[in-house]
Length: 436
Image (tube, rainbow, N blue to C red; front, top):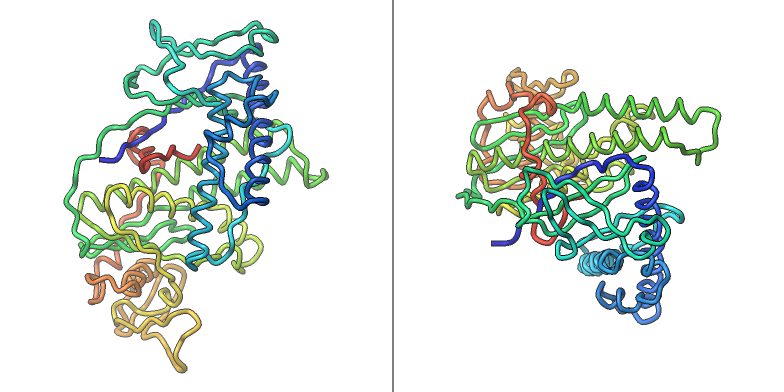
């Protein structure tokens, strides 16, 4: 079975000397990243070859920024550059096969003067009496009289499963991110003939219907409210100032908003996956039009609300977890699915290929309400969700759905749900650490 990696985040204690030392180290890590990236980019531009992290760390051993860090931490920064180019190489392969619409660009430089994380493999850490000793390197010993620091180890983690410690700069503080081996996944028998279809939206973030006569809606109103508050605060703070203006207050509220979005993505993805596992559903169909945010034309205010909601990140998260559990994931173009009637089994054209004279049997009478040809009224988003499954040629969705599936989907509000296990929600496919 593939390894599972999870992360637990703990905020580091506030201390002026410690904060100053960590800021110095993260600044040096950022500069080392850019220097290493320059070497990797030049190698690619001049020879077309892709460099790996180990080779890069060897070539950068005389770099002054590398000498400022503890050796293993500096090597981890170089390895990160190698991983970025490895991802770029895989994207190029997809583009050459015609699976990507645009040619990917090589990894770009980080902002000059910024901060970048530092990582320590477990073998350089020591656990003594519940405290973990983290080496800081020669520069911190000379400049800050801080050769090492001591971090409390979380009582709910097993030291034997720890793989790495990352110190990640946030908005005005630092996080200690413990990367550990998660609990093994118990095998679940899934039926690929059973499917769950997803129609993403705004107020109804995810509308899901299944071949098992179940349906539910992941509410997006509170998520939209959080984004609206953030946009108003940013507009107020930046009023009368240049577009590039930034400050510590903007840093804090942006960091808070990003954590809220990340939390929402993990919880929503876990709802979908758990529903599939509970009902032995082996196929997920996600309705998605590529470039829909870039081409959105719903008015200035609605565009702002729509673009800020991280639906693409949620789609990717569901896809990651589905792959990990052995669930088939299908991304389906969703044109005309909201217009066609699921109860009447209307033909659903492909975008750009609509037959002349095509008309749906039903119509959307108002926001959230769809009326079929026989006058039956159903949830408009549930109707669209079922049509997405039909358009993907899912076997169990080619017949007329049960009326209750489309009329009474259960509404789930993310922050009203029971507590989600952070280790379980952070599980990712082998070799990946969760996005931070």
